[in-house]
Amino acid sequence: AQSVTQLDSQVPVFEEAPVELRCNYSSSVSVYLFWYVQYPNQGLQLLLKYLSGSTLVKGINGFEAEFNKSQTSFHLRKPSVHISDTAEYFCAVSENDYKLSFGAGTTVTVRA
Amino acid sequence: GAGVSQSPSNKVTEKGKDVELRCDPISGHTALYWYRQSLGQGLEFLIYFQGNSAPDKSGLPSDRFSAERTGGSVSTLTIQRTQQEDSAVYLCASSLVAVVGDTEAFFGQGTRLTVV
Image 1: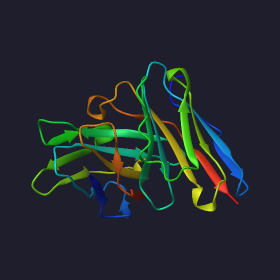
Image 2: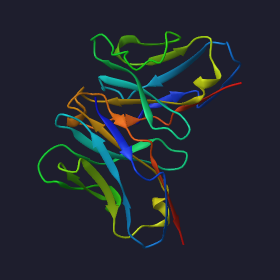
Image 3: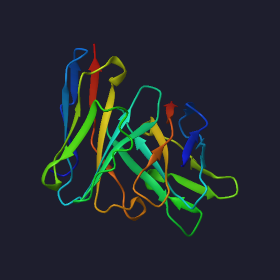
């Protein structure tokens, strides 16, 4: 069975600074990897996903993530954040089936 | 509707009462999932429906929890004899096909359940 660890529960960051959210997973088989975002008082929406191919995945709103198989990681990055990026971010993994396993989430707070 | 709709958005109930949570998936989506989001926790898988196949109930935490999906569309999650530890946000999601890798899951805004 797979599990997901998000290493940071809270990440404060200043506007226009870069941000990296760390995600590690454990699985014995090939996986699909996802990042979801939950803005205040809204539902979860997909930021990006890795299925196969290039290990660098680009998503919406300027986010990107890199799949590293040897380190079993899928870290999310953005070079310059905005106030509107304040949200909770969830990493998720699926072992080629329908059941998404989520991490505990990382709360990003962007300050002016 | 255009998205996944859940009702009620908030529910406060007394310990020991039964509650029903409703989910209307996106029209045409064959897969439907229920997750639970507790404070400070990740998203916990509860149950999955796909078309006419038997649902995967492996995530239901106890026999007080049950769910059904009528006509391959609307789903109801029922919690009997609610306990305070049941307090959480219950999220429903739907997707067009079963395999997560082929498509994304669209989430509703959730039902916040508070058991007092």
